[in-house]
Length: 77
Image (cartoon, rainbow, N blue to C red; front, side, top):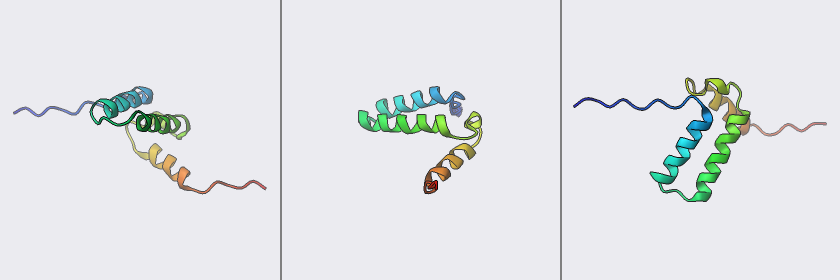
């Protein structure tokens, strides 16, 4: 039996998000509201994450983004 290689993730984040939400809808059968929530969160990540140009080759942008979200907001005085 010849092993089938895993498909490569799209480098364009918008395309990857679309493919992922399609997967959630078709394969997982998730509710539309759940898929919308995932889509919104992922698009905010794409907009706000530092170093997003390297997202497909390293988990570092996602780690930095999640770490920043976990910190309490700064209070300006």
